[in-house]
Image 1 (cartoon, helix red, strand yellow):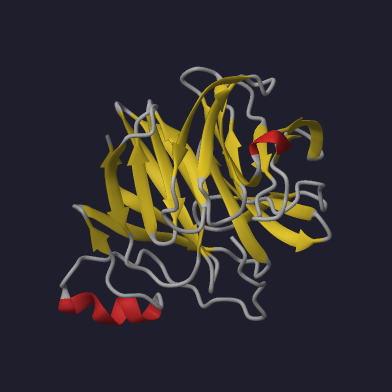
Image 2 (cartoon, helix red, strand yellow):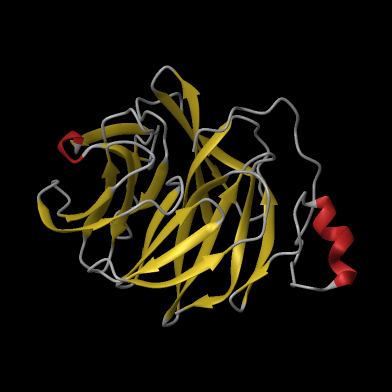
Length: 266
């Protein structure tokens, strides 16, 4: 969440598939700057190298497009849209979205919900209209919940899940809210690593911290923890429906890149 920008573009690498203990992939893992990637029955494919070296933060996905947030300083962030090959399709001007720590998409209208993030920044969720020239059309103030904000759109119930706490070390509150910010229910969670991403997979909460996706139910009970054996700083989580399951994507920096988790999450 707090990694610095990079000065060099990463070399292109396509589909580095990690399989634990597979010596034949050791060279591919070295190209990715990581150990071979497999955990809890999952493997992790490199989808694309992000062709920008700014301070990568939030990640979202909608209909084959990826939206990546970058903290460009001064309380502003830039959002860029990529296809699954990493080609840049569109980008915003610097917007007042703070750290742009996490991005999530409302399926019904394609609006982007962007969390400020950062352990000393009061939590706000900025609603960005991407249909024309990208602009912040509304800001929902969750400062009463704390700092270190993340957000996920709860598309099943057409609401939000907001994460906040006194700082990046927690403890954290997870608040299910309406789109107007009205809190419906909450649960608490202690520190499981620096908060980096948040999404809903149906009624399950996916919480991305350092090299781990923790799976919780709506009451905050931990159902699973998926360790990701990669290097760099974890940055942003995204989901997409896939039949009765959910495709899961996640970001890393140093260098900036996006992966897909396989098989489909259920």
